[in-house]
Length: 406
Image (cartoon, rainbow, N blue to C red; front, side, top):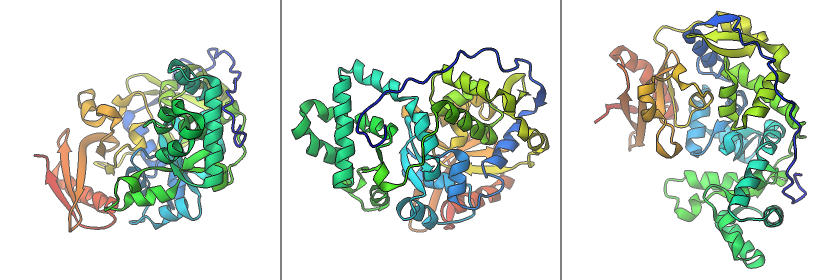
């Protein structure tokens, strides 16, 4: 349990998922209408009132690259700069960076930590199986988790190497690879159990243009000492609530989509859809693909209207590209390698009415951003003004030079 120092693996009773969901879609929905609904709910047509609202709607901004998470939130707010986000992370502590859904780093609202940690409890067993395959005993796992939690609580922020230097002489050489592991090792489990989050000091240091290797190293802090962690709900109830919030923003969606978004096995995902069945409405996406929305959102979905030629610019790792197993809804199959790249890299993209039409990258110059645009389909010259406006917003209001791909 959080604060106990023990890597307790909790058995969650999930009932067998019967055929609770209707296999016959009730509402035909054109794909362009479904995408228009998602664009509005993700604050890509109407800005959120601030980064915290945007992060809550998205269920966290994907933060494997910290600057990309800031841009994801900036894309969904009217502000050009980041003081609200820096204040939320470092001063108000209303945003926390930690491993969340899919076991990937996210900027998560502190108010949602109870929900996210309940979700993470469902992934603890997978960590245990990983460690066992690599020869780490349950007793060693418990010992490491307890040592990490105690060290951060007593001595403040530590990097992976700091933890290794402090704990290996005490625990033994066997602990080194699990403290220094580039994928998080046992620190990731300590996070899932509610002991650890990332320190904003490391985040600020890493943002400095002249930061050296030491300054760029991630720092970890003791989560209960950093924020007041909300109570953790029952995992089954938490998963149903998470699905409710997911469908309100990423719907219409199918169980396979929610499974991709959460990183959970099929059984708890089916159970969540079953538990929420009285609140769901079955729809048929274009092509007959079954999906579901909240019944309360039927009118909003029916009224969702795509804006002709609407252009949206999204940064690296944007949640728009990470929430559905069926990526054909917004991306032609032949273009997948340009967006979903090697080593899990997700390109920055340009959307037209919610569908990917180009990728882009940028480099900073003395004047601002030099942006290289790589069209996947035709990008019309008349769309360039909208492109420039969106890119200037992401660049913090500075100059943007739009360059063709070489």
